[in-house]
Length: 236
Image (cartoon, rainbow, N blue to C red; front, top):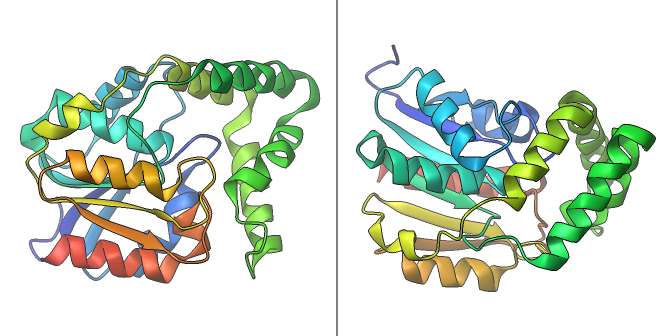
């Protein structure tokens, strides 16, 4: 049971990530949110991840935030159980199905992971996950490597299969009725601001926020700015 003064908040990590992705938010929003970080490592479909979240979630109704793959899962949760989602935040994500080029790159990484290990995968993905000019780049890179090691190759392959098979969810965005925040890093090369502008236009009444000096992992790269945006979204 959560405190009546705190908003139940479910946080969904992205590909190659675990609860460390959301640690600045769990700590920084502790005065307004009772946070629970979902496990997105056990299923190999986005729908499976969404159903597992709904089964395991300790809250009957909750605010929901997902980053990257976590955003795909969050969108499916809204589709499967809209009555349980009070607020939605989609960070550094998109609503389109995987492209052929992206799927081919994912298969390459899936072949690499069990042979060369997760550190090799992390090194290949780092330039696209963290803005190379980030002031705290070394610490952020170390966090990415730690999360990759924590996830491991088997769960990483399950995650990649889920992303490859995800449905196009653009049309479903119009059916979202809860207060929605759409946000990303200004330097996100995987899901750039233009992608989020399109999503925000599709969700009725959605607010769009772009975080300066941030790549794809905005929760870690610009935690204070992300916390400010999430706090406003939670309490207004």
